[in-house]
Image 1 (cartoon, helix red, strand yellow):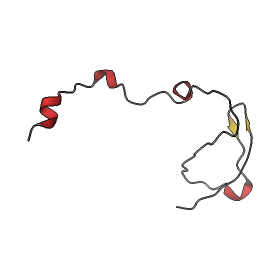
Image 2: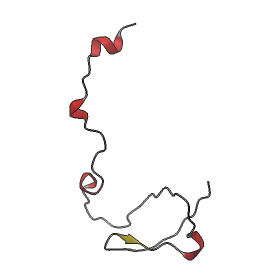
Image 3: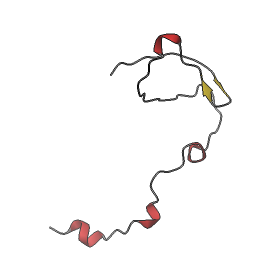
Image 4: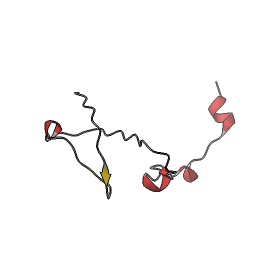
Length: 64
């Protein structure tokens, strides 16, 4: 895996990737916002798992 670091602006949810990083491969993107805007990240990235459906029994979890 190769790592590239660059700074860019986000315009209407679109990130411009520099020409040197444009390959036809999968990518893992980490976004760091450089301002103090309060973002509700659950609205941006809703939780993947619905934990309300999970059943947890502490006694069974601690059984040896």
